[in-house]
Amino acid sequence: MARRRKTYHHGNLRRALLDGALRLVEDQGAEALTLRAAARRAGVSQAAPYRHFADKQALLAAVAEEGFRALTAAMRRAAAAQAAGALARFRALGLAYVEFASTHPAHFRVMFGREVADRSAYPPLQAAALETFGLLVEAVAECQRAGFVRAGDPEALALSAWSTVHGLSALLVDGQLEALSEKGADVLAQGVTETLFLGLGPR
Amino acid sequence: MARRRKTYHHGNLRRALLDGALRLVEDQGAEALTLRAAARRAGVSQAAPYRHFADKQALLAAVAEEGFRALTAAMRRAAAAQAAGALARFRALGLAYVEFASTHPAHFRVMFGREVADRSAYPPLQAAALETFGLLVEAVAECQRAGFVRAGDPEALALSAWSTVHGLSALLVDGQLEALSEKGADVLAQGVTETLFLGLGPR
DNA sequence: CATGCAATGTTGACTGTGTCAACATCTAAG
DNA sequence: CTTAGATGTTGACACAGTCAACATTGCATG
Image 1 (cartoon, chains in turn cyan, yellow, blue, red):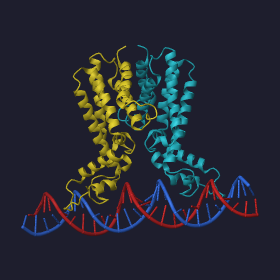
Image 2 (cartoon, protein in one colour):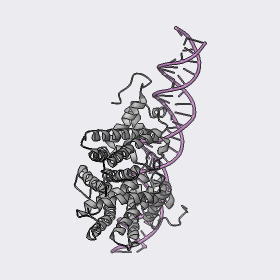
Image 3 (cartoon, chains in turn yellow, blue, cyan, red):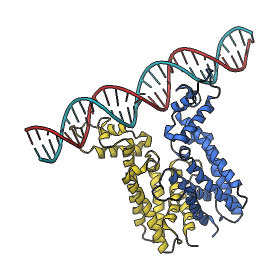
Image 4 (cartoon, protein in one colour):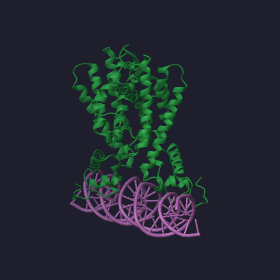
């Protein structure tokens, strides 16, 4: 990698930087993501990234944004694989969330961590995150119509769901459960969503 | 502050560094915590901290440990203020957890984040974290005896509770809910724990 | 009490990072 | 073509973590 390029201009440096950044995060963790390292991977000088990203945070924001897109896609895929009804689809969303987190812990951390200090400065990031949450809200509404979830503000109920799966994901990703349980992420997710659905169900 | 000290030796540099670190984190966030800044605050040279902490992670681990102790204390206090029964005490634990997080977001992030990469290298940290989780397990068991929580492995059920309150806390602390809701942390916590208790309750 | 060792601080240096200004090169619009 | 903007490069600065070499001091032991 980092092979010499022939032309002075790169051609698509922005994309190359992003790809390099994504690989750095996935392979070596968020702290390995450095502007200079990304530049090196793209075979470009240390200052070149500044033509495409205002600063390191902007690059991180882009990485986070891609993460939300990938997460949303994975959740959609998982739900689509369930023809068996609204509740099954809802559950699939939650399990996919946890699975994404445990499969891509470093990426997950960039998506939610504070490396990107002010989210509102990156509207595309915010939009991508909101779309993910939207999946949950829709699923709640659908389950309400099907009688699997009790009446109430769908957003508020979806927040319960989000908190549950996000909490488990965060604890997993941050290694907080290593000392506590041998069980795999999927088993834990099953257990936790079980309680969640009992709580969301009609009385 | 950072006043000149008279003696060559500081007297209690370790404690002073920890206090400085805590203040830095609380006042300016985790990224402001730098070994050099902590040293400055203690009125000591840049390399002095290395006599008391192997590296930056060790200092962060100590900060995290203090955080868990403070969190545990706050939860105990909140539960003790509820004479009204097992379920009320359990709820108080959860609300105190979320309140701690939203009151000390930066500290909370150090406690759970990955700045401290390998927790198992810091047994006191792990112990402090385990004690916090222990509060939840005990509360679950107590609630089971009182008939407020269904039968089942207390640890597994406590993990549901932990996931829920931790998830909400993480989302709050990371600013993920700012674009979503005007409600205060306490209101959100009420709503989320409501669903949680419905899910944990006897069928 | 003297002394010498281990603990504790200090200095100065090295590497790596984010960032910027000044400069070089290329691309495409007129 | 020409030339202005876009895109890369070089060199520098400040600051961080960390280490080796050195200075100072408190304390246990003789």
